[in-house]
Length: 300
Ligand SMILES: [Zn+2]
Image (cartoon, rainbow, N blue to C red):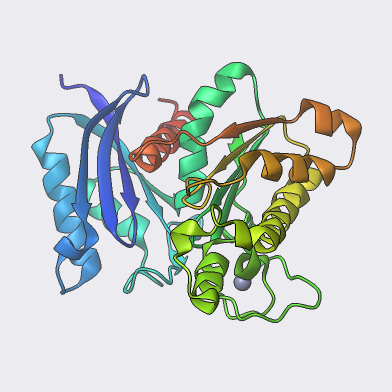
């Protein structure tokens, strides 16, 4: 009999990634395709064709699928919001994939699965409460509490980028004004570079940006420290494209976060690690989440 595996799919605005994950958490057959190659027709239909083809190509006994998307997903697999990928909102993606592959499908927010993938290693260190912060174009966050991903009642848990800031009124992608994400994520850097007629890649390396860098770090730290003060985790993961930029002041971010924590114990004990999710980290997390759900619900 062929080997059992969960299918992990990571759908992004630019790339779509697939991989299989066996029961020992080994990632196999990773494939990356350009989202644009899915064609101009019905995105979901085209995606289902590719998923079908990929699953058929590999000789495994598929136990289920995990699918990460850059958006909000209700626990029944319905996509509530996905502004960066047209055609997904309102779609019952979980049901559609289940209908094609005849296996249970778990759809979730991409940052949740990214952290869940990293958690597979972190839990070996005995951590049960781990928060992840992924600062890219937006301010992504994910929370694992007592070993479980925190999803919220509707799927909106962890939307830290939308904490409202007093005295700020910049328009956010969510439609509200003054959200943290407008000031503490990649969009703020792009806006700053545009105003100053600079290359955004030099934001952290240009000495003349000193004051702006300090301010940016404060905003990011406020978001992170807010969550740490709520959940009191053992470990936090810091990642995302902004932290990977040249000369990003990681130590300054870490010390600013520590300065904002409630207690000296937290300042001393909180473990901060850099994200080491690879290109297929989202697939790993989606597959691992699928295995965990099958294990808890179906007795596998
Ligand atoms: Zn917002």
